[in-house]
Length: 180
Image 1 (cartoon, rainbow, N blue to C red):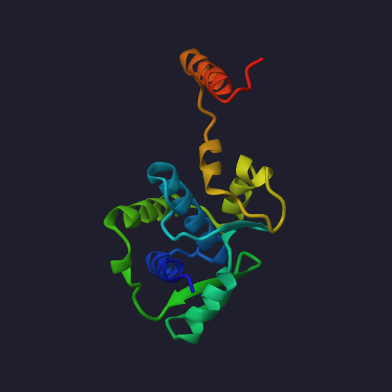
Image 2: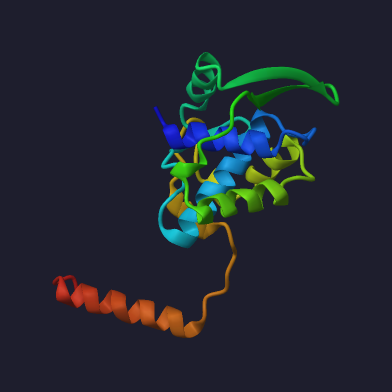
């Protein structure tokens, strides 16, 4: 079982307890954004989970099992409510998350996304993810690779960087006997 994913889901749900827009879709988007941003900054994800392309946007693989495990261990309940005509499934923690398995830096990343996404509901966050290049490049049920984080920003590339890359490519071709 993915202990870090379970505990982080509990942590996000705890922090989002008073957010009326918090439901399973928003939970998945917070986890996705924090995991991928952390990977982009540090070279590894927080949870180690794979993220899958599903209908409402990226979600951790096996999230349904994680939620079922949390409820069967009586660490959380799933509440179903109505939110502006939509059914919202909320993870409601019954115990505090075990934050000792995370660094303070990891929790800070997660806190930033909880705050950043506070004004948005699950549908808005789902729409946002559907515009991201990693989403557009993957198919339903396909894994979204972490290195896609580097495609989220349309950053300009300087001419010097392009020249360096071309020189490196030529050097490697020569070293490996592929030069024409």
